[in-house]
Image (tube, rainbow, N blue to C red; front, side):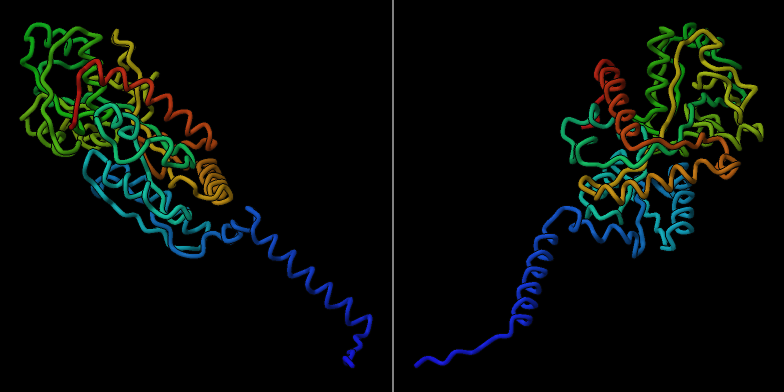
Length: 335
């Protein structure tokens, strides 16, 4: 005869309830919301912000300003890592291939929208391989000239270039940079011919303009502001829509008859597939930071700003559409 073990009714109910709870927990663990649970406590370790330029430039300064704010807001250290080279593509590729966990970010600039047209093959997709956190800043371009240069404004520069076709030279931050493209657009719109002297960055070009090795260079306001204020350089024109607060005495391109408005811009990116709660938290902090009174005083000559994530993506998409045809028309190639 088989022996029968009697189980009390209450114990049986508890066993069934326990099993049901275990199954429910397993089911919840597979839901997307639970998979992103670690983002609820983000950040729990240091954050890395990649700058695809050498140390000391305006992008590095912007990244360190953001990093300081993140450290104060989140209580975690922020490391700014400069990875120059390849027209910003070395640092940008490193960010694109990083773990999408919110601990690697990138401050990208206008090169992000111009590189795809300059290079036949790209190691990443400028839109699809990134999540857009927020716009960060903009800075117009200025023509900074050696004080001994004959022209003292844009109109005189155009007249000088027309009188001596192909003899005037200029520097920039490098081929395909926003500073270079502004110069090329000026040549097209004004019908002049000037020679681009290629430098590995805006600082060497600025130094040669000060030394008189080249008559002028195209640079962001901040790059030559101290030298302009110290009389080492003359500012001929600025690409802002209206006169720029930090150099109010400098007329715009538009004021001088050339309808050209452009800016170097800065945007904060993360690797594609970074969890939405993390992106939203970073965006909220950027927007809170940029809303602080007198925030602009912490970084002179650069117009700090913020945006929604979608606004940042659509802005960059628009820049890709704007500059791609210009680059192709000019026949500019980096490969």
